[in-house]
Image (cartoon, rainbow, N blue to C red):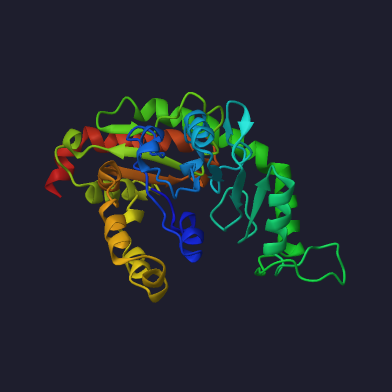
Length: 319
């Protein structure tokens, strides 16, 4: 339950991303299912902190130490989010930020790495600078690489936002906690739970589970249209990454057939099962976190819209 960018770097390097199913209450990676997915070839764990909430980093780091694995945090949605008072992306071996247009801290596109190992840092800098190490004029290229450098203009945009980042964060947190308290009282609506260790949530996205049985069997799509009519900007989470057609196209590519035997690819396909994530795709709702960058009245209106639809469900069923 994450965006394609989480696995694209794995595929580009000719490796196989092994999927771990989701936790039904938090929508995060289910850390209790990680060890069953580890093989002798496993190199690392990539927890994707969805919506700005945190994966269970206590369990993930313990598993990584036990099996001597890298932990690459995909905290692209987690600027200012925390696990036990420590910022996300600073817990694992390295962490990834995104400054893409929809993010709470954005310059339109781009991102950043946070790295706790100097040798790994130098490799990353070289790779993103065409294999050349900045500050070494005239020195030979150290390694193969690409150009992933951001511009000074993008940096200036980011710096200018630092003055309002904390204020917006507090506003989202306050409105999200209020909204969760209200929606939790509505049968069939379950806001995503945070793990105890998640001491701060960025709320890049506000995630909710919809149980149509509590709404007279009204399909999720009809429920979403009703919310839209009430002015609530909310949609369905429809990405089952392990079922994306492009993944199958990659496995059928000439490169992958040259790297892996037919038996290996067949065995890999047999592991592409995430039944809980399949259920999530049928029930999950996603509201952009920027919707919570407003007054408390706005959060009240959203809660009122959910409540209104529930209280008038018989009328909606007739539509």
